[in-house]
Image (cartoon, rainbow over all chains, first blue to last red; front, side, top):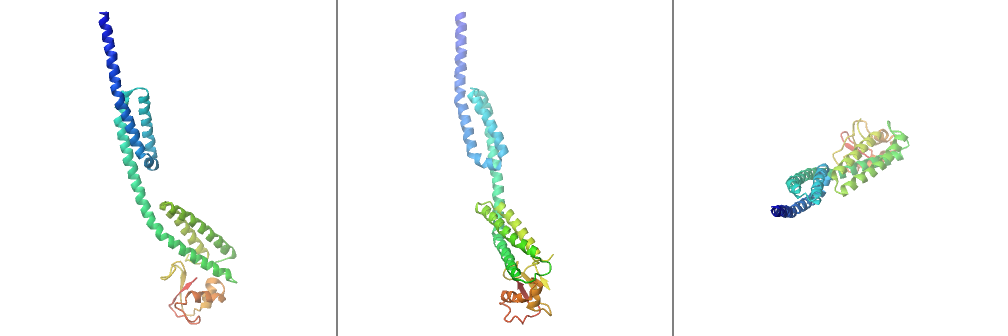
Length: 199
Length: 65
């Protein structure tokens, strides 16, 4: 009787060991697959869906923790869900990237026309400043102070335009257009101060 | 009458002036620059339509640099 019990116990232990061993390889494979899938989407997700990425990173960390503890059953149970989460993350990040790319392409077009526009505005202001600097009496509405402010304002405008140009050079046309619009607004104010535009 | 918004040619940000009866380049220079002696600036900017600074015509659109 006792001998039979020992054999039974030994058989159960053997089955348990075999069972665990049979789950280990697929569990390791599941974690490796998840890591690989997440690595493929990480850069895009980091930029376009950072919050969602953080959640998935947490889920993957939990999966790896279960694997380290030998809890292969939990790993295999959770793996499909994490795989789906990575798929959703990929879709979400790519959709946001496509949206951002489209917006940037639109901004690029706006930037292209803005470039010559701002240059002509700066030229017109510079021309008026040059003439007024030679004037013995300034016209109505323009004072020595406002002329001096226009001169420094034009320098500031050119510097700000340089910042916008730098943004465009990096491919960030949305920022370039935003900065460029601020430059145009500044130029409009300078033109008004010199009596170059209607009030 | 001033048309300070844009002109149809060249730099759209250059101020323009449509010549009215009684206008002279000196008067325009006085108005826009505060100094009549700077009329040559306007003349030089409009050499494509002016051959003589003393001859401007009503309705001409002049650039005021």
